[in-house]
Amino acid sequence: KIEPNQLNMCLPCLKNKVDITLGIGKQVTIFYCRGCGRYQRPPWITAELESRELLAMCLKKIRGLNKVKLVDASWIWTEPHSRRLKI
Image (tube, rainbow, N blue to C red; front, side):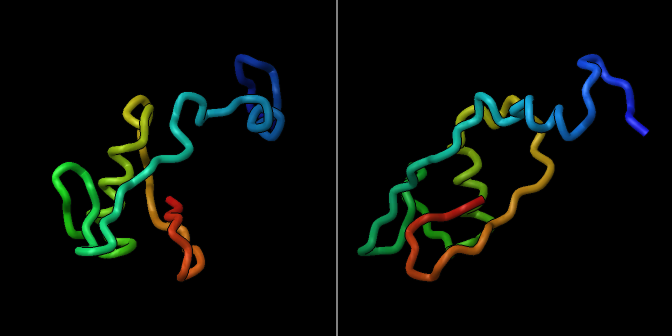
């Protein structure tokens, strides 16, 4: 059964047409010191890779995220030698 909505579209078509991430940054640059292993917040903080502290810091840096309600956030595993963190 198709639930009625204001656009009169089924849910799969609505998902393809509407981008809910519009206005939210897709990439953020986080500076990391190779010498001491700290991240620039400011000030420089120590955080383990894939830790809650690093996740919170990354989420705070994303522009436009404060306009939406964040329900869940977690790390997506990448290759061990990768310098890219995915949330």
